[in-house]
Length: 194
Image (cartoon, rainbow, N blue to C red; front, side):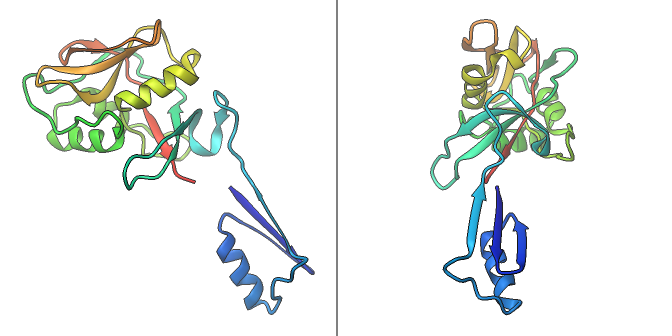
């Protein structure tokens, strides 16, 4: 989001509306009723590349509880090959159907989770906060941008049991659980909170 304030002779462009108003006051130019504050959204169309955010815009993900809504960004590319989810037989705390970031952090801390480790190791467009999407985040991607994914099964970060985790196929959009030792594709995502 960009905020542009035009007041007399001063033009200021910033991402922070409050900061813009404070700077104008510090300059001795109190914002007048005629000051124009235009807020424009730089959010691209769903499915379009969002270079400043490091990927393709997949849509707005609804927040849960105290977590705010956020824009879901999918990485420009996915794993070249297929990876195991990892941790077969181990109970993980990565059980959120909605919060892939928390799931990925838990999987990294637990160790031996190749899919999550791959996703978290990506850096694109200057962003290094990618993660393995949760089940619901993959479903949003299927609903909005299935063409951005290769056909076939993709791991989510959501565990089903000590031996299984959820996957989504981008052939049909089906979501089921598979054995954590299977090898599937990984498509990192990140979030942008406006």
